[in-house]
Image (cartoon, rainbow, N blue to C red):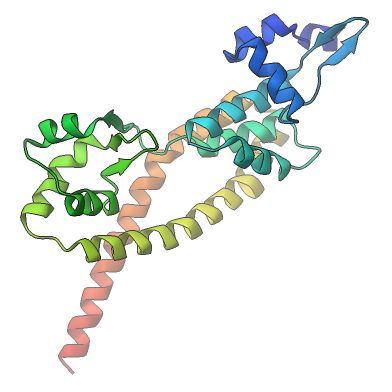
Length: 237
């Protein structure tokens, strides 16, 4: 009887996840979610369907194509529980509170109070402040726009911005992989053994995100200080 109470009708599922009936059926035919559980002529859905549909939505919000989503879901273990899937979704959500604002080029230039050349846009993109999207508009981290414009005024080389972006990307991927492995092998098993819900895990991760960012900044500053001391020591020899 407990299991019966956990089953959802199609209407209940769409209301829970905020996806149309048509899309649920489409995702089912594409194999992104399993087919409903049959009880006579009726089909029912479980927390596994909810978790997978929410993960599909999260991936779509990050710009994943349907083919990329299929590949991502195909890599999930067959025995993945709704809680395991919730962990994947939690790790995908942005680690900073500010979401980029979508602007047209005209809106961006009005916000910047200046015309922006293609080279300016390339520099701002490399700095992670202004990113062109597929619709020809721009995702703008508004709080950092003034900083980026100030660097343009100081003649910051585009090549240096691009090179720095490559460095951040290379090391960022490694940090992300190691942190993800840490959550998967150390954090999640501990909470899973304690019977924690996916919502509890999400709350834990959300609380850790700003601390993790602050720790990365502190580690970077410490490393820069050490690098400067080593450079000074070399020159004094």
